[in-house]
Amino acid sequence: MTRDKVIILGAAGRDFHDFQFFWSTAPNTEVMCFTAKQIPGISGRRFPPEMCKNDVNGNRYPEGLMIYPEDDLEELILSFGANTCALAYSDLSYATAQSLASRVNATGCKFIQLPPSLTQVKSTKPVIAVCATRTGTGKSQTTRFIANYLKDHGKKIAVIRHPMPYDKNLLKQRFQRFEVLEDMVKYNCTIEEREEYELHIEEGNLLFAGVDYEMILHEAEQDADIVLWDGGNNDTPFYKPDLLITVADALRSGHEKHFYPG
Image (cartoon, rainbow, N blue to C red; front, side):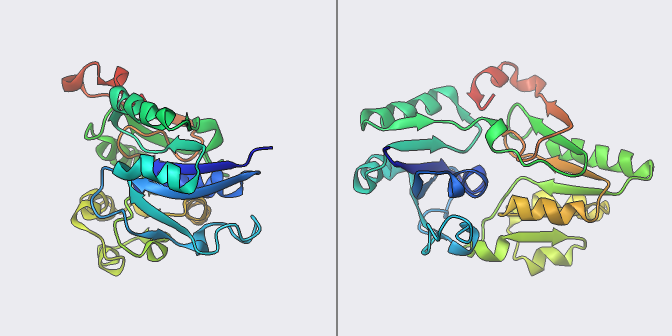
């Protein structure tokens, strides 16, 4: 049987989750590297071996995995002998997604997109997920409204934010727990992270983020009656939701039909 040699196309978010939850232990599979797009400064970093599940996959990734620019995709496919490329980031037009598929196919490589059923972690607690048709539609405002409603009804909540691991040391960001504003200093949060986290913290919401979203969920379940997923871009949730709320943007009508994953 031919061994799958996989390159994961990402943007320092879903790509890391899909690798940890699905690809790292997939049989007859070796992930060769990540590529990076959208977020500046991601390429050139290394995904650490401590988060590669080497304890359960036969030490498949003892050195971790390098992250390269997506612009070098064709060269990476050839140099690694890859036969599969997996798209693992969101909020790109279907034209862009198809362009990536065409570039990959032109090298003789498969182009795939994992469905949510293969990447969603099941929680022991009820999960409400807030997602959107595009980035910037008001997911976090909606999540905070729901959090306040649930707290007013006596429920303990934990908010888990879609990943924003912008620090160069990914291992330091494996698990982040925010209860007070000083925690953003503790985790060396960027301006972009602070914009997403600060209002949750000021409103008294226990907030989690990071890179290892199985670990994050298990920790959040210890403190919450209900888990709230505060999504990123127009991506699907990393956890299997009991209730999925999708926020649409009236000023960008039709975008829900034209941007991956839709």
